[in-house]
Image 1 (cartoon, rainbow, N blue to C red):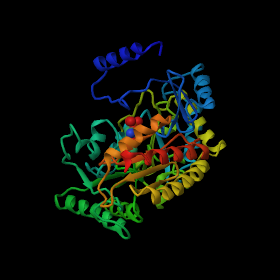
Image 2 (cartoon, helix red, strand yellow):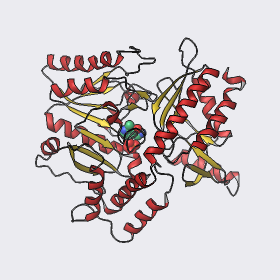
Image 3 (cartoon, rainbow, N blue to C red):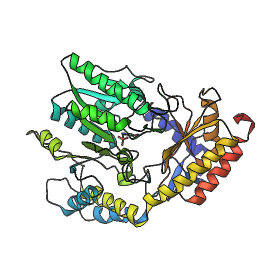
Length: 432
Ligand code: PMP
C-alpha cells in the first residue's frame, strides 16, 4: 500500500457500504492486486501460492484466456438473439467432453443460475416439486438453491428444511452414520425411503441433486455404489438426476474430465460454473434431449448475458488450454503425489486422520484418536501456512478439513514446498 492507512480506509468503507454478510479471509485481510498462474500477489509485491482458488482453473489471468476475451470484446458483445458462430463453436467443444446423452446446452452466468435452471427443468419434466439433496450440500445463492442447500438452511441464519426438500445423511464413509464397506448402499437407501415417503403423500420426486465429491461437506468422496444406486431409485420413480459439477468438473479430479464419471453414472442434467470461464462469469447447464424438450413448453428462456460471444470465446479458450497444457493429466499426477505424501505424513502426525478426494480436489481431516474434530488446530494450520506464503482454506460441518483445490497448473515443486511447510507447522506446539 502507499501506507497502511489506505487499507484501513478500504476496510472501513467496505464495512459501511458493502453487505454485512460478505466475509473476508484472515484476521489481517490481504489486499490482492494481481494474479499469475498458481500465485496471487499482494500490495507489498509479496507472492502467495494459491491452493484455494479452483475458479482460476488454468491459472490466474492466463494470457491466452485474457487475449480471447479482449479480442472478442473489441469486436462484438450481444445477446443470443442473432446467429453467431462463437456460441456454437463453444457448445460443440463442450459437448465433446460429455456423454452423448447430454446433447443440449443452456448458457448462464453463475453456478447458482445453473442449478436454479436445472431445478426448473427437473420440475418441468416431472410436473413435481420435491427435491432430494445431501446433508451439508451447497448449490448456490438463489432462493431455490438455498432451499436445497442444508449447509445454509441448517446453519446460522437459516430457517430449516423447506417442505419440498428432502435431505439424506451426508454419505461420509469415514465419520458419517454408516462407515466402511457397504456404506454406499446404506446411504442410497435413504433416497429410496424419501421417495416412498413422498409417494405415500401422493407426491413424487422432481429431482436429486448432488456433487460427486461433496465440497462444503468437507471434500467427501461418495462411497462406492452410492451414486449409481441413488440415481437408479430416482430414475425408477421418474425423477431427474442432477450432477453439480460447479467445483469438481473440467478435469480437476484427474482420472476423468467430470466428477460423475468416477462413479460410472450418466446424469440427466449436469451443471457447471466456476472453472468454465477461469474467473469470467460464465456457467452452463447440459441436459438430455428429453429434459430440454419438456422445458421448452412455450415459455421463452431468455438470459441477457448468458451465451454472449465474449463469454463463449473465453470458455472455448479455457477448454483448449486444459487440453494443450495437459492440465487434467497434471491434476492426476500431482494429485496422486500429494495424496501419497499426505498419507505418509499421517504416520508421523496422527491428527491427520483422513486424506481424501481425487486429483487436485483433496481434503485432509484433522481429528483426535477418538475421531473428535480438531477445528482449532485446522484453523491454526491454515492461518500459519499464510506465514509461509501459502493460502489454504478450511471447510466441513465441523470446520476440521483442510481443503486443497489450487489452479490446475499447480506443480510437483509447489506440492513439495507445501508439504515441507505443512511438516514444519505440524511440528509446532499448538498442533500436538
Ligand atoms: N454449486 C457448488 C457446488 C458451489 O460450490 C457453488 C459456489 N460455491 C455454487 C454451486 C454456486 O455458484 P456461484 O457462486 O457461481 O453462483
